[in-house]
Length: 57
Image 1 (cartoon, rainbow, N blue to C red):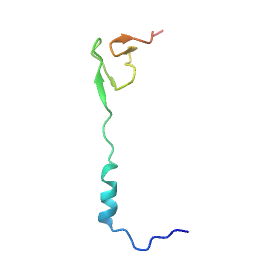
Image 2 (image 1 turned 45 degrees about the horizontal axis):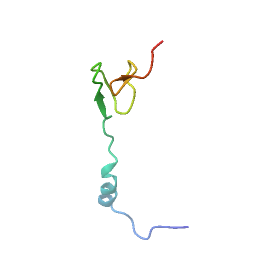
Image 3 (image 1 turned 90 degrees about the vertical axis):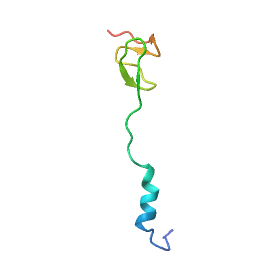
Image 4 (image 1 turned 90 degrees about the horizontal axis):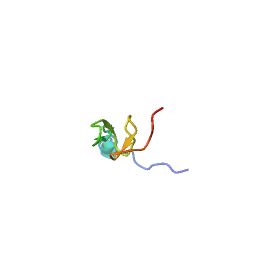
């Protein structure tokens, strides 16, 4: 079983975790309706990249 030889310092541990912070969701504005939605997802009105792709029932 692998066991570390020396303890990793808190500084090195925290440097490794420097990129683990949670970032906000990438949002975009639909050009036809002006609605804000997540990038690469269909807007709540059913539009994607300016075209109607989903008919709401």
